[in-house]
Length: 439
Image (cartoon, rainbow, N blue to C red):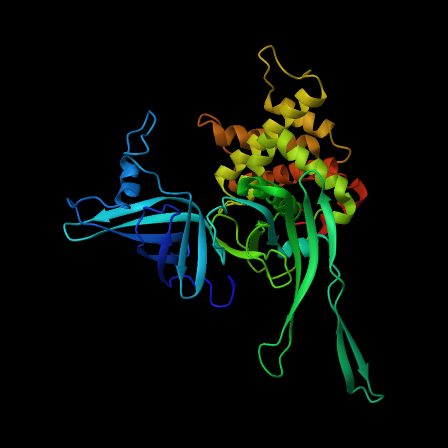
């Protein structure tokens, strides 16, 4: 990931630097910082077994602290949640630090700390809270139908190129959610890496800004909501290409403004290049800002249905037996929530429960249009597959029926979501022709 000059973390290449933990009494110590490809890892040297414990050994003793009651901080000092490492390449603040492992022999020892995030170029330990976060999400440009650069070519009469120029659109900011203070910023960057070469990089950045610093989780909640919506629309597990954060009171750029600092993390889904452009069931223009707001509320109100859907989407085995069960859970929970929130619970039994068949009926009844040709046949197969997958005493349909039913289950929930956020039945019917889960 890009950083400030040489201040980058290259996977597998350790950086040797000095550790700062914010405690004046703690002696300076050299440490190794490394991106393993799975974690951001900090290695701290420790004394041998049986030796007098130094300032840092207590951090790793805390991993063996007794559970079930309060831990005495003076006996079991905790690893600080934020740490700073500085070397010849610059400073890195590690956010969300926790115990990784510890090894000691009679000659030497080492402890490893895992950090959730590494902020490249930060020099303060108060990055546990930030006032700005932005992500580069390549899929967002497609979903918003961002108008990118255009080539203008002039030719001679014989067809030879006379001149060529590139027109770059002006940067724009679109508010996606006022409640979440979430915006999309269209921008571009140019570079001349060497003579005869010129690069233009077009970007759509998702940005959250707060008047004062708040937790990373508060920012991430807004970003996750939008990423889930885009992924659900295309039925592809999209990720991020770049993450940046800022604090208004830190790292002032030459123009007097706080700089956006690159972040290295393995806690968020990474962007993977696609072979072909994604096809969306609905686009931003079809639901607009109000649709994003409706999605954010729906994602909270119907979390028990949305959660299993996202689990299937981000699973390494989407078309598995487990996914059939998860899709059934999503349908059952969705039908129950619709019944409770919209129908005054008329399908619920005396114990406040709903049958799976009743849940499917509640969903279909709540949809202005359905993406299925034969609803009754789908209900029958959905029940057979769900019950067969859950109960060992029930017959399990063959793999072809299970796969087809899973596809329809997922499509029904996505279609319901699309209608709820404001997409029209006409636009959805048109989009089905190219949808990944099309009939």
